[in-house]
Structure formats: structure tokens, C-alpha cells
Image (cartoon, helix red, strand yellow):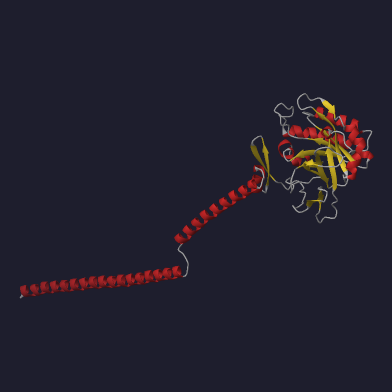
Length: 361
């Protein structure tokens, strides 16, 4: 009896264990099935999303839109095309300027409108245009030639009244100033003297007296200039004293000018002067002129006001700038503009420099 009972108990335990195993396996199977269903559902969802995205991209493409990659490629291609067009445009512009007779410097200047470009001894120099100096403000249409071939102001500023002038030296020889006055010349800048470029000797211009007396006798206002080759302040004082002595007997109403130009010869005594040294010479000269009761002025070209002097440092004085052609390339304020070196005026044999003055002296 006891053995039968133990057997039944053992068998009951085994049955219970089997039932638990079946239930456990069923749960595992159910979980696996559930997980499979979830995976199927998720896979189906992903597939629908992929199909939706693909459909959207196809719709976008059909409407003319592009993917980021495609857009980037288009930008790169457009950039290359723009660079090529710009390069060709610049080349064409330079070619047209050269074919029209404009020099290389002029063509290069047109590419850098915010800088002053200077060509000197086979090199190009670039000077940013600064607002630290007053700009003259004239536009390309503000000056034009009159019926006699003289440059005049034709702009809208009623306060500007231009005058026509010449500058002369012994190179013009003996001048018939009565004819010059009859030709409509208002003023004359007469060279009083100069210093030799190599030996440094001070010399009076051979025709200084004839020119000053002839011009003033015929109602032409007179200013004077001195071609400087001073290399220090002492020599500047020598030059200014010479010119002050020369003009003392005469009525000089226009400025007394120091002429500062680049000497082409390597042997010129000023060849190695620094900007500071040039400016020191100019300031000594101009201050002495001012002290003597005359109006000081500096004459030079674009090279003078960039390579030889810094225009900012000499901005306190009246400016006489040489530039041949229209429009004026020099951007800063000026009082007299020497616009031609090959002018023709009755009473003067050969070429003569022509000037326009916009300051009332």
C-alpha cells in the first residue's frame, strides 16, 4: 500500500513537471510568435515609409527639385561656370582696352577701382584709396573741352569756376604773351628755377624774367614753381630762399610751388630718398612760402603722391596734379590739374602744358 502511494506521488510530480514544461514552452512559443508578428509589422511599416519617401522624392524630382547631393553638384557646376564667365569677361575687357589704344597700366587700373595703381620701373604698386583725405568728388562728366580745345568745368556745382592756364619754362622759348592773353589764357605758372639732378647746382630759368613780366603786363595772373632736387631740409631752405628772392619784385597772385617728380636717372641725387625725406623737404619749402605771405603748393603726378610722398602727409597744402586724359585718375582733392603736355596756344611755339584751375586765387 505504501509503495503504491509513493508511485502515485512520483507519477503526479512527473505529470506536474510535464505540465509546467508544456506551459513554459507554450509561453516561449507565444512570445516568439508575438515577436515575429512585431517584426513583421515593423518591417511592413518601414517598407511603407521607404515607399512613401521614394514616392515623395520622385514627386519632388518630377517638380524640378533636387536632393542635397544633386543641389551641391549644381552649385559647384554653376560656380565653375561663373568663374569661367568672369575670367573671359575680364580678358575680353582688357583685350578691348588694349585694342582701343589704352596702355597696359590703364587696363590694369580698371580692374582695381578701389586702389591707386602706379607703374614704376617695371613694377606695379597698389595703394588703397582712403577716406582720410578729402576726395575731389568730380565725376567723369564734370569736365569737357570747349570750342577752343581747353578743358573746362561743366558740372552742376555753381561754386566751381574754372580757369584756363599754361605752365612754361625755357623749353617754350620766347613767348608772345599778348597773343597768349588773346587766346583766352587766364593764368600762367612760370618756372623760376631748378636744381640740377646730379650736381645739385641751383639755376635760374633762362626765361623767368621775360615770362613773369610778359604775362603780368598782359593781364595774366602768375604763379611760379621750382623744380626741386633737394635731398635734405637745408637744401630745401636754399631752394625756397632762391625763389622768394626771384619773385620779390613781381606780383605773384597764384601759388608758389615746389615741383616734386621722380627722376628717371639712377644717378639722380634724389634717387634714394625715402618718403619721409621727400616730405620733410616739401614741408620746409611750403612753410617758408606760407611765412613769406604766399600760397604754398605741391606739384606732382600720381607717382609723386604715392611712391615719393604719402598724400595723407601733405594734404594740408594746395595740390597741383599732373594727369593726362579724362577722367582724372587721381581721387583726392586738387586745386590745379595739368591735363595735357601737348597743348597748342597762340603765341607759344610748339607744345605747352595746359592746366585747369578750380580754386579762386
